[in-house]
Picture (tube, one colour):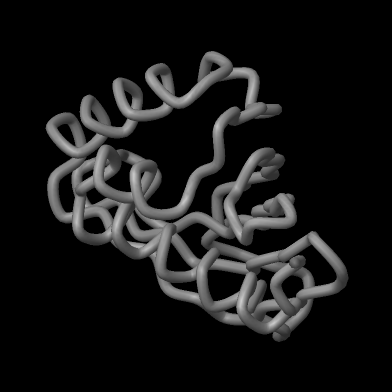
Length: 130
């Protein structure tokens, strides 16, 4: 039976927090990812093993990185998270991102898309990116 959009939204946020903030990508995949995992980010290879390897390396290379959820939208099997990412050891410390997750009928993540950009130090308006 398909999970509700709100259940999927909560699971997407729990997955992202465990993987990114708590630096436990293997546990995040075991808990929240389905039998397959299709990746659309060109910097991360397809599949669960590649995802785990990438984020284990990121945890070592960028200690203290954090994600903050600003907005979430859930519709059918899709969840969109609008996030602020802070990378304290990166030359570009502040990032804005949109992540899209697709869930299967068992409530597991099976596909991911994202867009990410540096938050500029100056803007032509006073609206923030969040």
